[in-house]
Length: 189
Image (tube, rainbow, N blue to C red):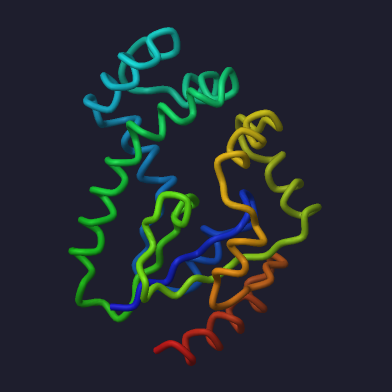
């Protein structure tokens, strides 16, 4: 099984590109959302570490955002509690898909949390800053402050680009992205 990891800036279209590969996808953002809705242990851990932010189960996105915007330290506390759960879910996903030709890892903090392995194929999604900003402003709960807090815990884009085997320039048209994906798959499969 080939592990294809998608990396890039927040709002660059990583999840969209991941879907175009047509292989099983591990989407960490979706898994985190599920954890907030279903994992009572995670809630208890967050309530214990940050009682002023979390009132009742399930965890609400607004509570997470408020905690992160209020303090960078809160983001680190949240990550420490949620990250082990994501790692478990990733391991289950990999085990369930071990007979597949390839899997796609759409994990925003893949390199930061050392979830990548030596043989992974890393693909950097590059998008114009103006496009990224436009897309982010359309998102619910978008906040420049929140974005800046996340950027502080991420490795630089130049580092991610340097670590990548391939670059896909995402101009948000499926046609050009699919052509790039086909070229990459021919080289790695």
